[in-house]
Image (cartoon, rainbow, N blue to C red; front, top):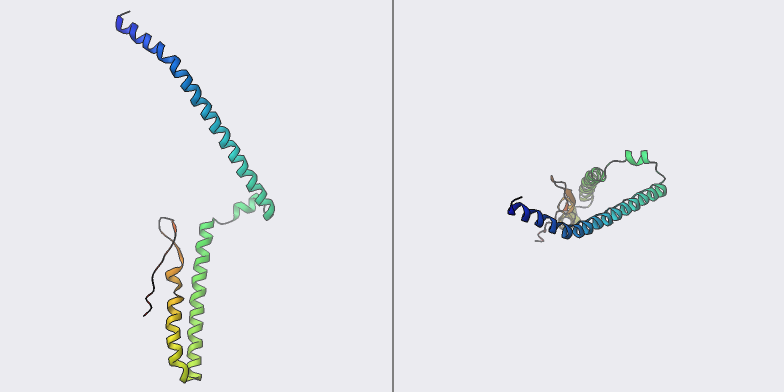
Length: 144
């Protein structure tokens, strides 16, 4: 053996006792992590089972439920349609009232302008962006 290879073997030999406690510490940390993760998953499974029992849904029924984001989007669209319908009915009612009592038309027109600014649901409603980030759009209405 050459002196270089002897010194190389000695350095490998001397490094291994210091590596072993490190490996042992890492192995213990990994074992603790695995145990914690297993306990966490078991706790989640128990919670799901309890919730299914409370809701009286079978696992097949739970699997058949639509994803929450899709359902939220459907409800938001339905909500928007209903608000448009309400606004249209209010306009029709206002026109009917204007025909019956023309003297209050001017006063109601001013009230409707402030109501429209307050009820601008499109400006305040929640939206789903293309990147699937749920966000609230905020706009400042000008009160002139």
